[in-house]
Image: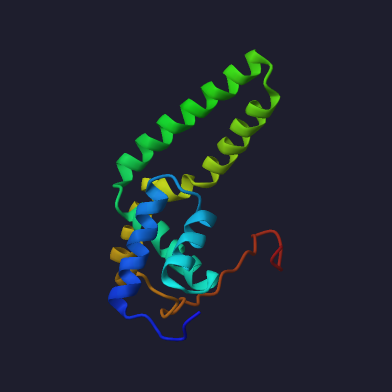
Length: 151
């Protein structure tokens, strides 16, 4: 392994290459190995390229397209699971179930409300009190005409 640092341009190119490989369907561990060997870097450095590549791949797909692709893929996995069940192929059924669970973990990445909420909070932040105001102090008496002390 070399000890020379990569330039920003090299880093960006390697991250884009990782994004391309991930988009082609290569598993992350395979991409780490390829990049590690190709650029003679540690697996840790290659994992950094892959993490940034995953972010780039997500950013390249608009939110509404992500939701559509998610729904389409999810429906396909459900159909695969049912076909495997009917065929008595338990291994394929379990595999499809595992993929469905993994997809459910991705919902936060495609949730358009999350993006709306983040934009709203940024826009509204200057108008929040931020606990810098004062609370008016007024005495409240709960005494009734028949009693001398409050409840």
